[in-house]
Length: 277
Image 1 (cartoon, rainbow, N blue to C red):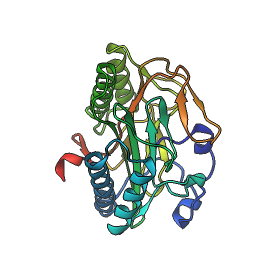
Image 2 (tube, one colour; image 1 turned 90 degrees about the horizontal axis):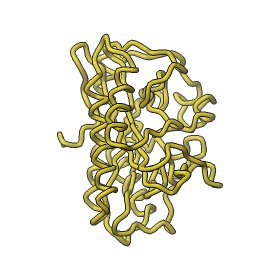
Image 3 (tube, helix red, strand yellow; image 1 turned 120 degrees about the vertical axis):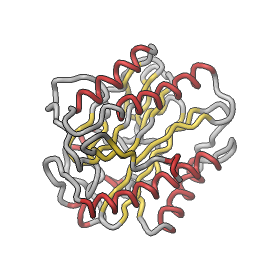
């Protein structure tokens, strides 16, 4: 989940005691904490895999939200997003020109040809997992298919730069270079983030090169939510009147992929890897 920059600077509002006081600084997880995060991340991966298999034209985003909440709770966790700064859903469901933070609704019908982003998180034994996928609903346009493919490739280009001793800008540069080489734009209004005891922790994980934030050196035990967002047109976004949903300013398509990733001494471990289920 990408949180709006003005919310990220505020203390988290949540019904969980561990979220009430936002921790500062980059946290390194212990082996025991990493084991718990593997479980929270597995729950997230399971839910997203299930949603990718069940979604079909005619369903609503509320249908997907209900499935996600039910399954997260069945697996012994609670939805990370529900109630977070007042967010009403267990998933973010963003369609076509909606970039991030789409609120699930029984009025939002999914149609053939849609580009559907589904982002969800699970809070399990004190730790969060967080991941997002983009789904091509039925047959999409060639442009939409290419946007989705490049967005997923960009995520893995960034992940390939993860290992102790590398830097955040190694991730950002790899993502940015791949996106630009394919003539798409990186959305700069939202970033990835650390994840663990809190849904959003330090550091901010940019998808483009910048000098506005410290270029943090990666250390084993860091857990990062890496999540590039690509637009087919302009990189700029605007927020709708619901104060959550971000859309492209030019009505162009948007795609996003996200994984929770553990930094290791020699590389990385994708904790939300759906291919291992």
